[in-house]
Amino acid sequence: MNVCMVGYGMMGVWHTEALQRTDAVLHTVVGRRPDAAKEFAERYGYRKWTASFDEAIADPEIDIVIIGTPSDQHEEQAIKSLQAGKHTLIEIPVALSLEGAERVVAAGEKSGKVYGLSHPMRFRKEREALLARTRAGEEKIRHIAGRFFIKRLINIGATGYQRSWTDNILWHHFCHFVDLGMFLFDGTPIRRVQSYMGQIHEQTGIPMECVVLVETEADQSLLVHGSYHAAYRFYDKLIVTDRDTYFYDILDGSLRTSEGTAPIENEQENCARLIFDFLDAVRDNRPPLASGPSVLPAMRVLQQVQDEWDARYGARSIPGRPLD
Image (tube, rainbow, N blue to C red; front, side):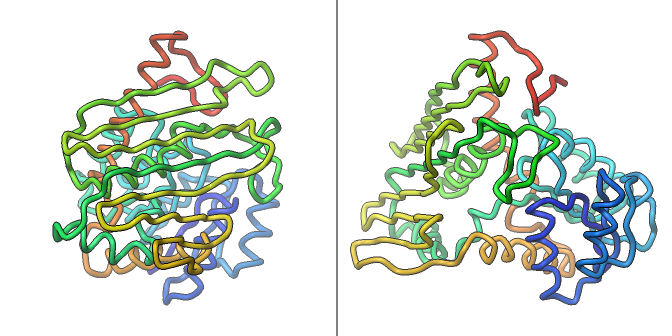
C-alpha cells in the first residue's frame, strides 16, 4: 500500500516512524515549504515530495492519505482525499465544527473507502482489560477526569518548532479527552453539558482556559479542564469505577491503581497502534477503531461548548479557527 503523508510536523514524524515498521510503502510527502518537504522525504525514504496537495491525491499510485496538517485544513483536505478515492486517516480533530465533521463523515460514507481519525487515547493497551470489563457489564465507570496544562504564550509546538498555525484548546486538546469519555460511556445518553471557556487573550488572540463537564443519564460524569497559560505541564487522566481507580500520568509514563504503580507505553508507541489498526482496516475493508461516525458524539459536545462561547462573546474568526 502506497502512503502519502500530508504534513511533516511531529505527527508526520510519529506516523512515518510507525509506518516504517510495516510493509506500507512511503510514497509521497506533501509539505507547505518545498525545501522542508524535500528534506523530510530524503530523511525518511519517501519516493516523492510535493508542495501541492491536489497533485498528490491525483496520483493513481497513492492508496492511503494521512492528513497531518494544521487543524483548520483537516476538513477540506479529508473531503478532497475521499472524493479522490483514497483511504484517509485524519489527524485530530476531524473538523473545527460539528457541521464540518458531519460533512467529512458524509463524504467518507459516500466514498466507500476506509477512513478514520487519529484518536490515540482509544488505543491504550493498558486500558484494554478495563474496556472489556465495562463492555461486559462487570465494571461501571463513575467518573472520568482529564487535565491538559501547558504554557503556550508563543506559537511553538511540542518539538520546539515555530508554528505557522495556531492551536485550539477546545477543538484539539479537549477533543482527545471528550472523545475518550464518549468512547468509554459507549452510547449512554448525555443528560447535560456545562462549560467555561475564557475570553480572547490579548497576546495570543485565542481563549486560553477551558472547562467541560458532561453528565450521562447513568449518573456518570466527565470533567476536562486545562490552560495554555500554565507555568508547567500537566497531562493525565483519572478513571474512577465501582471496582478501582485508574490514574494515567502520560508525562511520567505510569498507571496507578489500588495495586500500585506500573509503567505504560509512551505517547509515540501508543500512537503507533492506531497506524497499525488503520492499515489492518484497509486490508480487511472494515472501519478502524476510531471511525468517522464514532467520533461524532464528542464533536456534538464540543459544538455545544463552542455555541455557549459564541453566545457569550459573539461568534467570530480567531487564529486557527476561521468561521465557515
